[in-house]
Image (cartoon, rainbow, N blue to C red; front, side, top):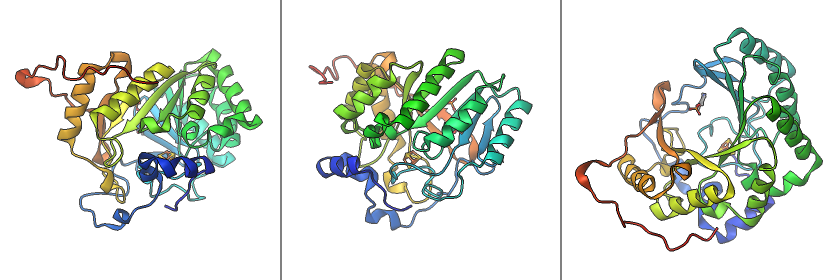
Length: 310
Ligand SMILES: *Cc1c(COP(=O)(O)O)cnc(C)c1O
Ligand code: SF4
């Protein structure tokens, strides 16, 4: 996966190591890794028609393209991102719509990729088709664009896409899932985009990955989820890094992460606390990790921040 950053990120990463490590390739990428796979989540096997991953009976994931505004070094789809292949054609969209019609047990479609907001025109074409599939009751879009290129939300194209999403939001619940890993990503510009998104008929959720050298810290995670909570974004999932080849230098220890997730659950409002999950290899799906409240440890007073500034 080639290095790719937006001008905005180039500036931001110069002063923030937690941003630089997410985007600047390091020597560790070449290291030998064992027991890892290009596609441990078995997405390719569940790709029932080009671009549509149907792994769970009632939910399906559409990969709109393999294009993003910037390339994250820890991306689960590092095997694909940046490749021109994978951009949905009109025929692909037709086939996806037919498949969804023919599988009425699917009630929830997640647009992913690639970043669906980065390929706004194509995403609009897809959305106008998907909104009319009667069995699809819920729609979602996963994105990192507000954190990679907040300025692009001022363009007429993005405004048009958001107007369409707002209109679909009258019909069915629409979720925007913000992938965010560190409070340094919540700049004033990013927070302005989030505030603007809140003016639309969408529910804002977030997803976060534990990344070694970036955010494996109770204090960092506490600040991240508190700031998201204050911004009107509900933390949804907190992932262990997938067993994907080429990103294992980011993978931490499950025991250490469980400890952090447990302390977060003790310290945060339920509204502000994501579910810690492992997307188990070989396609078992996302499994919540049991927290470590056993052993009678007393969490009271373990962490009482004076004030989180956001
Ligand atoms: C994560 C994921 C979903 C959605 O899972 P939820 O638990 O409903 O958020 C659907 N399909 C695939 C392939 C996924 O990886
Ligand atoms: S924006 Fe998302 S899909 Fe694109 S490289 Fe980053 S993590 Fe991967």
